View 1 (cartoon, rainbow, N blue to C red):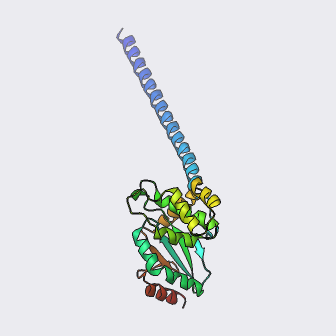
View 2 (cartoon, one colour; view 1 turned 90 degrees about the vertical axis):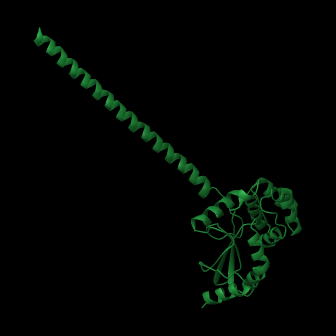
View 3 (cartoon, one colour; view 1 turned 120 degrees about the vertical axis):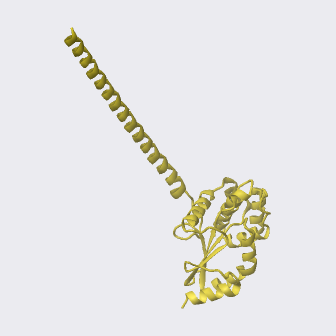
Length: 238
């Protein structure tokens, strides 16, 4: 009797061990499958996001090769200007040194690449930085980017406000000579919002953390006064 009981007990122990092993293997395979599904889903999601953020943008006329800014002039020295149309210090920079940039371009000493970023959307209740930057892309279609950008700074709304409405952005464009129908349709359709996102994302990847940021041949310029800009361009041209 004792021998048969011991045999039954031993068989039961073996069965239990085998059952535990089967459960362990099932758990492992289920976990592996779940991880695989998550990885595949993540890759698909990243691919969709990447294509939308990196490739799905419309570039306005006059943009540089990477599509990150509007180029004015063709001089040998490159001045990169990162501005946000909602940024008060950017307005001050344009008022103080904008004419100097124009002069350097006119004298064929430099070309200026304007990067209208949207860093300050959080200080507007209507994403004004994005809307105004996108509108500047519409102005580029009509060959009036520079004139429109100056007018936007002249009529800059206070930080923290709703910003100008789309109708007001359109009125500004008409005021600098743009066609109300085509320009207004471009603004209302948000044609260049994806471009604004591209410009802003690339600026962040290039370690631009604030506005205005001025680079001369890729080097930051701390003295953004007319004399400082002129000196930086002269030094870069040697």
